[in-house]
Length: 85
Image (tube, rainbow, N blue to C red; front, side, top):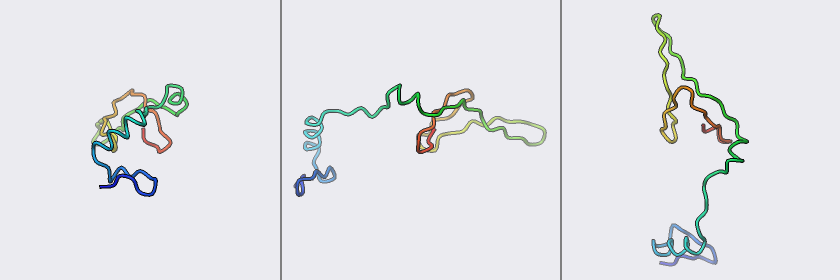
């Protein structure tokens, strides 16, 4: 199996050992945003949707469709540019 094709790296064609060596060569990369960048994103306090029916009001917490984290009343949500909260 050849990992490189005309000077480019194709991870789909690399073995586990080749991927490990590549990671060791390149080092690790942080995938987290800095506090400074996070502070620039819009945020708001989550308030559950109120369902009304037959004289009763029920607060329904929602769930993120991507990470499946449940939003609870009062949580601070940060909105990413892709609109993920």
